[in-house]
Image (cartoon, rainbow, N blue to C red; front, side, top):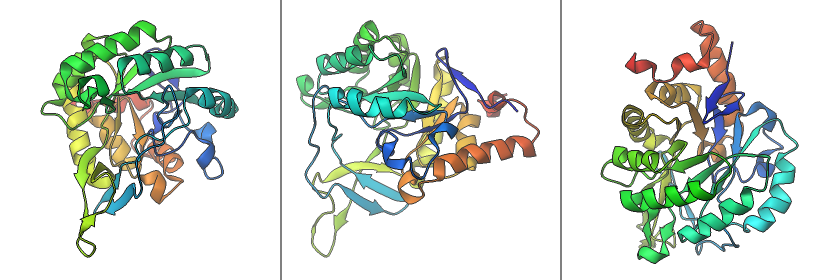
Length: 302
């Protein structure tokens, strides 16, 4: 059986990745997960300088998932390159670095520094960050802003660029087309859905930020729908994510049009989820005598 997939000229041993922000930079999970079994490790967001993140509490459990408002806490690109990349180089897995920033200049600074590291296979650009120049509107919520940041990042990036799309928009295909038109090499979707939880006994918000990003199994039907719609609208590959808990969920995303998948919130529930998903996809292929995993991609449209 062939489990390899290729995105923007980069080949992965299998289509299973980790979703940014749920797996650290791999070190945190390495005692549970053999990173060699993954197609790629997608790191936590990396900024041009250290970010302290949001006030606590920053995480709350909700029905069918969780809310988080971590605020993209990270030590900055210089520490990341010195500490995390050498660790990841030990493993036979692709490295995808998630990039965040508060202005286009911030993103470009990180992208240029990451371009000096040959071990990094691709860059995933988190456009859910607030654009401080535009009144804190997320880059991923306006097609014009998404086009502009994608175009500028592509000018400076040495690695293929994945734009991570926000679901908090009226028409996901409009955003996908804007990213593709600006030169994006691939898309990852979906990011978290904005939600809120109130503690009725304390009569206060469950997380200090009031709102947070919802992830987990409850958002999967929305994510699958958006991946399917986007696969019909663009020609670039899609990394699907949003509520994947097992191999069956992953295969559903691939049938909808995703070329690869990322496991996110379930890493907090079961740290073995990513390797179980990879093994489960192979078992499914054996069961249905599928010789090449790429036969699954967008198969519901055939």
